[in-house]
Length: 54
Image (tube, rainbow, N blue to C red; front, top):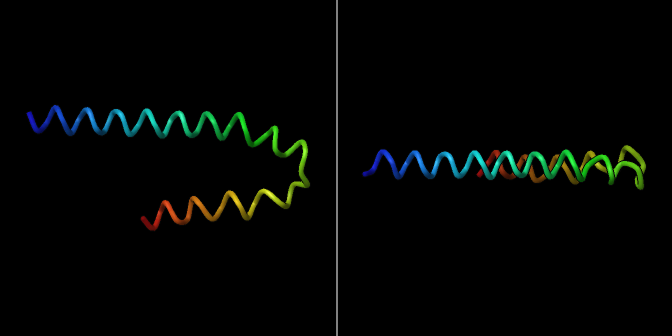
């Protein structure tokens, strides 16, 4: 039971990460069209750092 539950949680987490990556790939180019290229670096780097620490 425990192994299947862990596997289910792992698969669901991987699916969530893949969806987030797809959303980023779709959203980032549209934002870059309307913004100067330098402005996106700071907002995108801070959440990834906080996620890595957590």
